Image 1 (cartoon, rainbow, N blue to C red):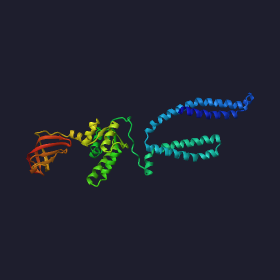
Image 2 (spheres, one colour):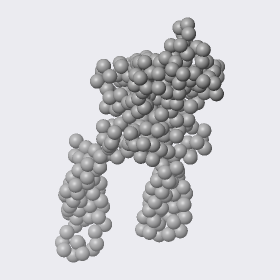
Image 3 (cartoon, helix red, strand yellow):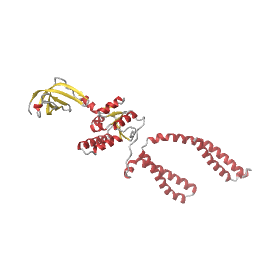
Image 4 (cartoon, rainbow, N blue to C red):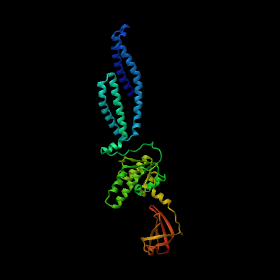
Length: 357
């Protein structure tokens, strides 16, 4: 339908051109015995024939170009399209003003084509330049660049979706530096909003956690080997952030990076791939076995009478059955048992030898 419409318009346009050429044909048509009416008819017929042939060719070319337009436009952000359209309009306006002297001062056969060329060049120049500087233009206008919507399935490499807990944990940066997390690392706008809410909380500790999460995400933007992207999809069919993350990770076929044990379990049940920086850190900690003797500093009393609590260099909690008497001192303890829980590893020990600093 589109091709036929273009063909019809071009055919009608060239029919009119041919008719007018026949009307103003040179005198040799008269010498050939053809009057003006005949030349007008022949001109219209030839113009319509040429228009029918070339109209089909041009119509099919335009149809193919328009069909490719969505794919081409999908590669550009909304900010670039907006700035490019504004630059196009600006270029047309400036070009029209600059083209006026060429139309007035030059002959029509030279002035009008030159004016059209000026407008075309400035329109293309304006759209390209404005699209390239879209971020600066939006910032100058006091507007915020919108987050990008969910990318398509043509993204190459591994895909990761970041939870707020993983951003706050901070070990995500170490995973990215070592190449364990690479390629496409995505964070949803609602996760950023959640971190901002935590950073604005009245409690000082919550504020510090929220700011740390935002700093980690900001550092990921410049991390080599990482293509960081903010997604604007709000997943309106779900109200809870955890449900939104699970649905979005499933939609993107992305691994979910989280240290939230309950979220990780729920996502795992739904068949999603989970990357838990806390679990990875736990698995890389040096093991201690029953019977090993280690030196620790007993820092505080335990929950049970007579217990003392110490910590290894990697943060593992050591519960000492008879360590209350050694609180505040360095002591040698013997490991009696180890237990791996959902929140980490715990070591149980008894006091082997106590000594003051």
